[in-house]
Image (cartoon, rainbow, N blue to C red; front, top):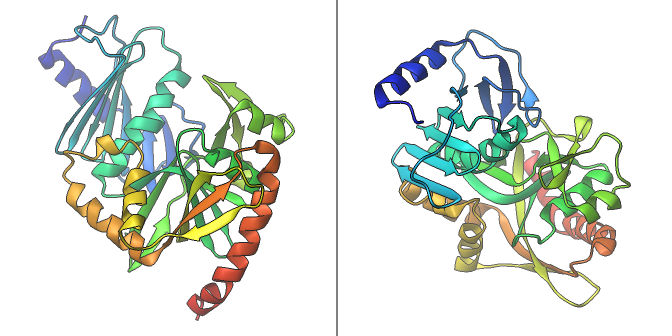
Length: 325
């Protein structure tokens, strides 16, 4: 049964006063949490107030009056998510996140929605621009890969990681505007891969299987600091073997950015909605947005990495040198 609103308020007040068990860094934020999140970079606890707190509330025996498998509600400063067989989540003002799990739900199942949908909603509340994609650090700046579901965003990032590049984020890439520059913020310290991409990497011994994908912890292959945004690549499918790099112009840039937001439906109704539309225009003006046409074949992914490295060196080396002075 669901607790009454009065008893629920008392329970939440109690949990807010609890000392957090775990502290992490992600998206430029210090996060104090009641649950372990091995996907995040550990931080040393201190007396300062955290940017974000995650509270695990007492378990529910059932969720009543819900027909949809996943249901969400948005009001300014408030996001609620109900996952029928998992539990209830609530995100407040980009600062507090509450989880009411169903009894017996594994903690890794809880984290799947916590670090996905709920983190996306929290980023919207804080005025950050979350893209559904993966990002890597390069000598020319941060490169983000976006595209349709199953386009190979994580696979491409994993191949760059295999070639010595450090990962900034997988699945949710947050862009922030700071001091007239755009930065990609570091997020999860792991990458989630489908079966074919996992075996392409040689089935690393430190990887494990979680829910529906293989999870590869990155260790030193993770970039822990923000990186200047250089370009956003929209992965497109073609039959030809030779990849093509096609810069986008004008309003097409903004359309592609908005079309590749993470859970874009979670933006509608947020306090920051108009600010994030303006930020989309700023990103379109300052960063390059390109279509990358390639065969959707994991066996050609190394050729795509070589092609992109060569293209970046040709297009961005001079720009990067000028920015250092």
